[in-house]
Length: 363
Image 1 (cartoon, rainbow, N blue to C red):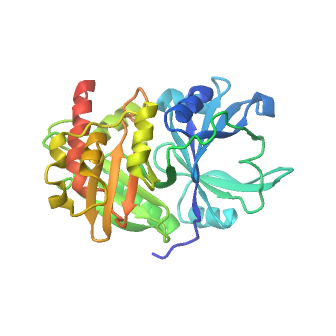
Image 2 (image 1 turned 90 degrees about the vertical axis):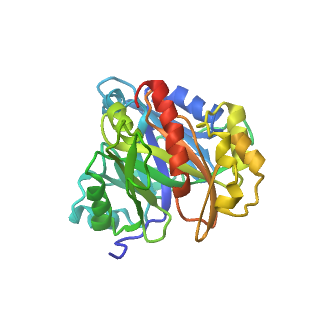
């Protein structure tokens, strides 16, 4: 199916959290984001406080409810801190909203205008997997720092940056048997195409397995892998996520960087914890993946994985879960032509995750 409407880029991700002020400090201290905007009681927002964190072209909005009856508070009670909104920029919000809702998407927010002295912001939203919203945003006539009610903030930490550039892809976990439904949903409502799929033979160990398909928009800028659990001897990482998140949701966000060695070095120095990769993974690495520009000893020291496809190679690494629940984590990725997702690393990655699951008593 041809693309039904144009998507320009990821606009932001909104996290619902229990304490936005503390979450902002976490992402500033550990991941070196900068707090560029704020809304709360001081700006006239009586129900929600939010902090906008930025690095490169990545924007995270951390929102917390100011009373226990608010839907954000109820969502955090159910899921813990989590990604609640995936926002994309579009040239025409009404056009995008009409396309998706007439093709079966369930409306969440009708086309809405928010206005202040800096212009007009257009947005709308639909429901996707779990309790996640997909939001359409048009900023063409808005010149403010982020949105009405937000005030600019000036960081006390100049040049605070780990080198994270863009959102490469966003991975969702859905219940067993639901993956095909959501692949079809994105194809039917938005004209997304299937980029690649992996079955449980490709992504498995003795104890756990998953199946995954990646859908993307026509430009390839918006990539949304979708995972579902598959049966094995133990409990898969996807099933563990579904149980602790209490339903489908965003499992991890991949951030791109132009220099993964430098980025990961800075993040480790800041206190970010990554999955441990055994030294044996790096034995005969160039025999498996071919010649690469980076020092293999340095990659081994940092725990960075390497894979190659027909277009080139990539380097990637995964953090430990960033919540007490074993749910949300992050990926750092540097692409040298490769358009894949590290299929050659799935076994090593799964084994690393299973070691952590065993420590949690969830394998």
